[in-house]
Image 1 (cartoon, rainbow over the protein chains, first blue to last red):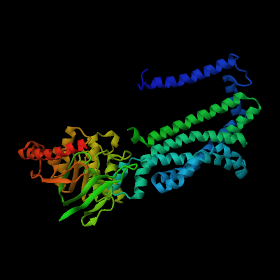
Image 2: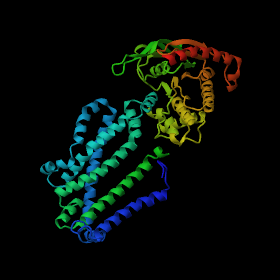
Image 3: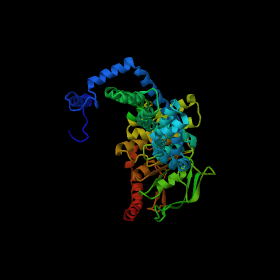
Image 4: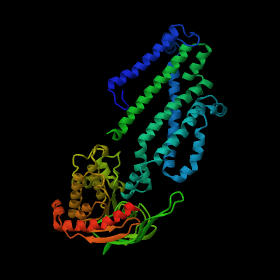
Length: 257
Length: 260
């Protein structure tokens, strides 16, 4: 091992899998070895059994579907609002001066702290879940998009001006395409955070969803179900991350060329 | 009749963090005729790039004005094409799309721009690379694309700011021949900023030298070597004489610039 020395793709995959194996081995040792009481931590086999039970008997697939729908819905709403605002902030300094202090402040408001208020305003229906994710995501996206747009290479903008571009052309044909990969990367990151918000929202006031199942399982001391729920979230996150990365590689091939 | 008139143009940059304002360019007058090829030669930091940026409209003069065909320049525009020292191709566009950028901005339909774009890609010798992204090209190829991109817009003046400065010596020589060849065939007003004396003499009809900061024009030297110029003119007595003359003029300025 030497600093920054690359490794082969096979080695990369094997090492990645190895850590999962180690993790499960440690978990099995702790549970089957009797070091941890089953009341507090289920063993892997119980977890799998609980998972099968959830999927076949409890209609857990519907819960998963609900949660995915909420995340995607809230996230898409946030992105639709935040990306244009972020681009406007990055491109136009007066807009930045107007919004930047407020957005920076709002970014630190924890979305989960809004849940009681949102329940008052929107009840415990779907609107409340979407709003939690929206509030949690929108300010983050605005700020990150604004920062990358503002950092667009100045010489590219000047080149476009000397080619006859007007202000609108600069935004449409330089600022947006130049930063599209960074914007996509921002969305990928924030989607990961949106998953945290949805689960918190479902823990507090919901009648379906992965978070709802988890909080129900706690009442039943079914730690196997809880762990299964958490792992399902992890797997969905992994899949969406992979999908995002593949799409970005495709859309922004010029970056990797 | 001069196409471009520079009248008393100076530029003073405001001091940074309470520092003193810096004068980069003293009031400068220069007239450039249509289809002239003028090279501006000077040590680094002499304000030659500042002057070029003011002509391009990317910077505003502190005093004076620049007139293009009788109209004062207020900002950047498609009538003054520019090639930068840094690689400024749009990395998300292919060679073809880069060259077509200005035409598309003007709203030209794809069918009519296609022919223009193709012809300029041919002129800079990049046929076969139309669908490559800038990242896949060498530095010389990127600058050739940048020249094609600027020319495809058919600007009145082509401005070049040390466009070959980052290239290796051999590539630079070839690029000079390429650009000169295009100029000889097409005729175009060109202002070319460089700190390379040989480059300045080889391409120019007139070489304008500038003093160390704050820059002003020190001399204007006509280059009466006939066109078309072959690279072998670099070995001719006339070329050597001009090179020596300009070397001496620039040398004293470079010493000043280095000691300040």
